Length: 95
Image (cartoon, rainbow, N blue to C red; front, side, top):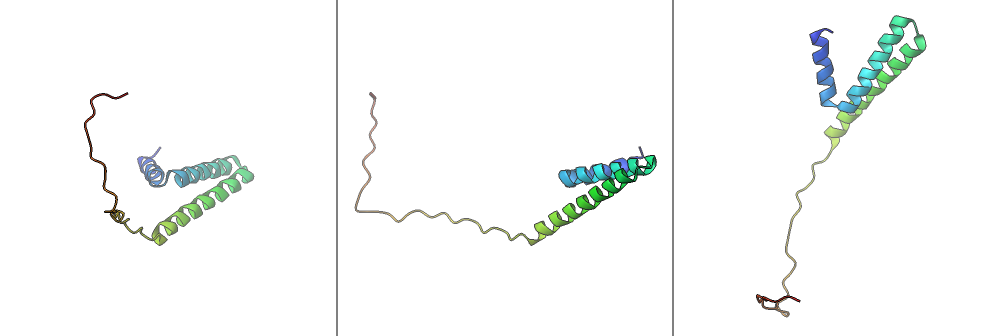
């Protein structure tokens, strides 16, 4: 295999593993179908490739349109001065 193709496949798979796997599966089906003269396998491979490209494009569009979350504000509840807390004691014997 050509090192350029191996590097291209590695880059595609590392960015988006699911859509990259589907894309490589479709390319493989299309190549096998074209070399063996099986037009049904070739057309299935092309449909899978188009689906993977569409899926990758939709994932890219979704990440752009996401609104960043606001940071949560942590506040203590209002103090109840009417009821004091009991004093802490060090008990040596527990039952």
